[in-house]
Amino acid sequence: MTSKTTSATAAIPGVVFAQEVPDKARRQYERGVALLQKNEQRKEGVTALENAIEIFPLYFDALQVLGSEYVKQQDYDRAIPVLTKAIEVNRAGLSHACTRSR
Image (cartoon, rainbow, N blue to C red; front, side, top):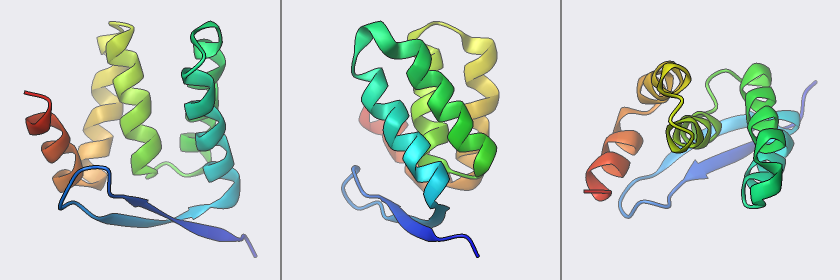
């Protein structure tokens, strides 16, 4: 049996979204986020996020961070399907994030 942990997106005030995330996916996500913070390791960070999504395709946090990273890289062809999937998984979370950035 796969051990799972809960991921809760609560960075946006008033928005709570919880998922049962497999540990392996969560570890890849955490690794990816840490690597993205190191500019010289962004490629490895993207790969870790892609791995997290491969393990758990509905992983909202990973989808949101990966899609945002693609936008930062101006790789819109890759960003659009990832962010679209994030919206499908959690409409409220992404719509609040979009309106907050205005």
